[in-house]
Length: 179
Image (cartoon, rainbow, N blue to C red):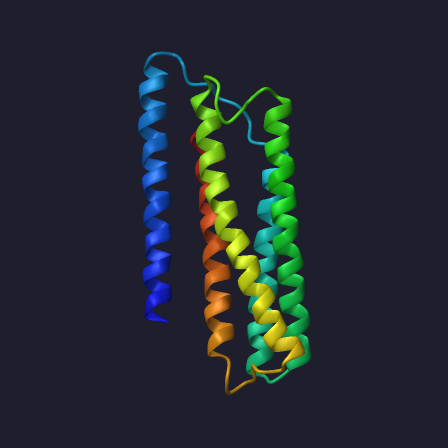
């Protein structure tokens, strides 16, 4: 568990650095009237709602596991997994919306480049979270390894997933309000 906390801290510091870079870039380019303000894709809002629900279902799965309701915990973990995949699909559709509006990763618009970098790096972490959830679901629902008395691996997976969910919520709010 201590290594997980170190990993989470390093992820948090990475995004703190990125958001700091965004703020500095925005300030400098705004002073030159070269910062383009634009609305985030609507799909990012939907993805945010989906990932918050996935965190809730993961919480319910952990509570079910503590009550030794293994099948229910496995089913709720699967729902969290599917919602995580839905999050990524919505995020990709959001990126496509940016492309459709002429905002690319490169090409003169630093504001959209920052959105791609921040969201894209989070997507990579969510992919790792989906792999973790898949493994956790398999161990819970198929192998029945986790139980009310043996759920350390499940708890670590849930903590990582909640962290990714909270991180995206913070990033989304940052990008929404600090355009």
